[in-house]
Image (cartoon, rainbow, N blue to C red; front, side, top):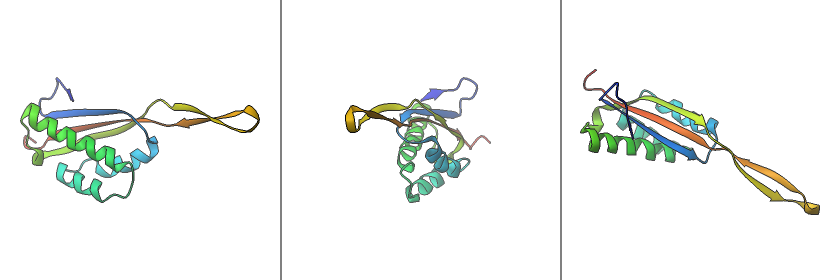
Length: 121
């Protein structure tokens, strides 16, 4: 959890090196941006995508951190900012015929979610 010095009513969480494509994660993040915390959990539970589970864990962790560290109510919070950035590629070599090898590049991504308290707004 990263505390922003400009605002005392928001919590920022960052998950790095998540093993999935940026485009697959953005497809899920675009659905939850701007929704309340409870709506977000329902949306993520019902989505059929593999990317929804790490994002679900991240949102749940952000709300728990906001409640424990700052004393914010989870029901009053909403997703104010959610973004997915590209991370480094995990590079492996796959053995092929005649002693050759083909590269395998597995993409990773960094997911950032900011929860804000809507009771002051």
